[in-house]
Image (cartoon, rainbow, N blue to C red):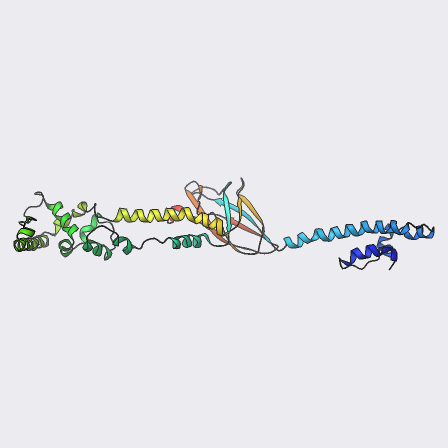
Amino acid sequence: MNPDCNGVYGLLVGTGADLELCHYPRLGALDNCGGIRGMGWDGSARICNMRNFFAVGMLSAALLSARPVVAQSGTGSLDITAQITPTGGRPEPVRQFPLCLLTKSYAEIVKEVEGQDPLLTRDQFIDTLKSSPQLREWIKGHEAMDLTQIDFDKLVTVDDIMNVPEFLAAYQRSNGGGVTSGLPVPKFREADKEANPEKFEKLKTEYLTNMKKFIQSHPSTITGMELELGAVSPKVAWDKVQVDHRRKVAQLAPDTAQSKYLAAKADTDLDGRAALRGIPPGKYWLSTVGVDAASGDRHIHWDVPVTVQAGQTTRVALSNVNGTDANSSAP
């Protein structure tokens, strides 16, 4: 190797190259050393090294600039289109709408949030009711939560009416006041309960026996008692518990999704298109985190699984087919 090129050689060792630029045929145009040396000029080595230094600098810059390209090839991309087709209409782009790429299904995130503050079971809720133990047990044993429903008379028996205080009181109000002829009238008084308990219990037993016989003989008198059960029917309270719970989950789930599981985010453009670049390879879910995109009568939200592969662009088309219509699903 030409000793005048030691500086250049030292620079190239770091790149794994072993070139002698002063005598490398392809770089002969950069080497004027020979002619100058022949003239006996002592500064020829300096000129040679300077010119070769610039050549090495260009080569080093090319090598360094190639490194980000290699690193970038380890990620993937998503090209997304979002459209909704209203009933009887044509597909319309979902414009300027946020899309989230999650590392966990949004449906599973909702379950996670629900698990942190679980909804009361039906029986647990019934145990909280301020009603008689007999009524709570009756409700637990029947599917009905609405005691005011039209066919309630088909759900209760005479024994139910006689054993559940709220049912007997509703039956009495429904048929009392001269509405039903022949209805037994109680002869016991609450004042006798302490003053003359034996008389009280005897008269009460006689009344209940006569009432039971009357109901058995007049089953049609059961109809209408549901109108008197509104105050003790648990349906309104049960519905409120469920609605409040769903509303709380709907508020917390998007925050949980974006704070714990968000990999990337983008808004669609006016053509309903969006792109996500530099995504590490893996399995993801493209989600609207419970927010509906609307077009006509359709209100669609998405939670679509996608797979990102290194060095590749995956195309995802969001539509009615892979979305969920809020009008046909639970809130």
